[in-house]
Length: 76
Image 1 (cartoon, rainbow, N blue to C red):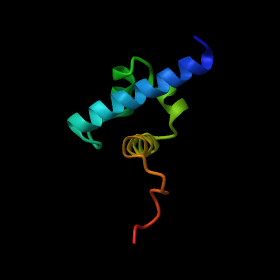
Image 2: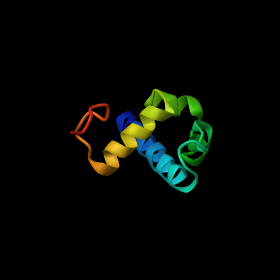
Image 3: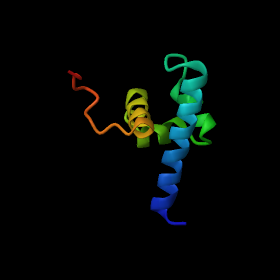
């Protein structure tokens, strides 16, 4: 397994862990540390993949709901 594959696998594990935790206990009550533990990594690696918890959440929602629109644009 190459480095790119490992990085993609880790990225997906973080997304999966975040989805489970956000779904179970809500966005506000979920910490990056909890996500890291669930994804079997550390908080620094989570932040290597995502700039913040907000960015992680946005990517998760875009992935799950296949958003191709800028989430900051108003829907008319």
